[in-house]
Image 1 (tube, rainbow, N blue to C red):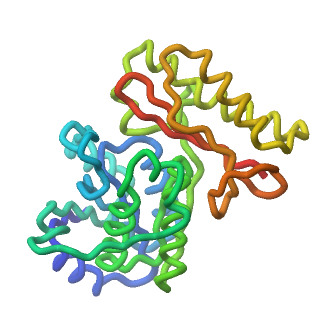
Image 2: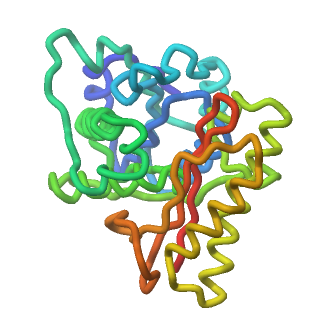
Length: 277
């Protein structure tokens, strides 16, 4: 496993690769959800590149950039066990040198849900991912279903800008209690961790209502919201039943849809989702 810190070194290595190249972009503090992406990339490609970069461009002024969890030594051990070929670990200055002033804005699908609560978030995500795609030139790139809106935004960017790679979305990996794996789960104490199971319960309720024949999206949102409000530690950011491609809120669920939510518990802001159809 090669550890690389500069763009020039990645490009030098890229010229030596033969066959398909799989890229797994991460912000580190790896968990089983990340490793599921790495394993699928390993199964489908000749070379696997994992990036570890806590991207400052996607954090708002009141968000947790400085305290975002990090454990590089553990991350590298886990990636070595998965037979990762290259780990790209650039500095902030390497990715955003003095004078940097070019940004990628993906419109429409970014205008709701996460962006409403975190203005500028997807500009930061799209920009850094576009840079990683240009640097690594992967054949395939791997993202988790847990960050469903992010995956939709990246797919839109790749299609709109004619990027020559395939985006693979890997199913959400969950803890034994159903909580979607996330680096931010470390912020939860034991009581908050128990309360956090309400996210999956609300999503499961949405799926059960839909499978039972309920097509009225507002009724599904109402039932989800009512259930979450029974948990005193949970503060709802949003509850959504939206079109699976455009993320526009639905009145009637008559095609592929996405049930998603963001809930604050303690100092953690947790997101999760479940496809309907």
